[in-house]
Image (tube, rainbow, N blue to C red):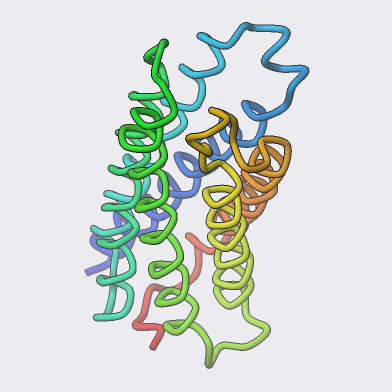
Length: 201
């Protein structure tokens, strides 16, 4: 039993590390200065690589789910990361008009954000009774990140008549804010990996 608990803690630690790397990618990629430094193609690759780290972390998190709320949260989050894989990969394509962009990039991005919101709400519900504890703070900060990603998706919608996003600056800012929240949650998860693993809800 001790080796099994130790393995679970190791998986939780790696989950935090992988989420942190993915969050860092989504934190820096929206910055205009970063895009100007590396170019739009490399910037798009950073987003895509970040989404792959999110998916890797989400799959590990699903493995360590300890109760029904955790399991549903993890599975929905995993689905959301797959949508982000699709949207960030499609965004690497050039020459997409507004209609194609919204269908191929924005739609899966919006679906991914919805999955994250649902997952974040379920994750918070799983720890809501542990007010003030480390896992409670992780749930709060991750839910805030999910909300920020949702706002970013709305702001990133491309208006067909103009071919421009509703508010590209806001989309970038909210993406970075959401990623910062996820990064904080990921860092907080590292010491949480040393705590006893027990059902949280």
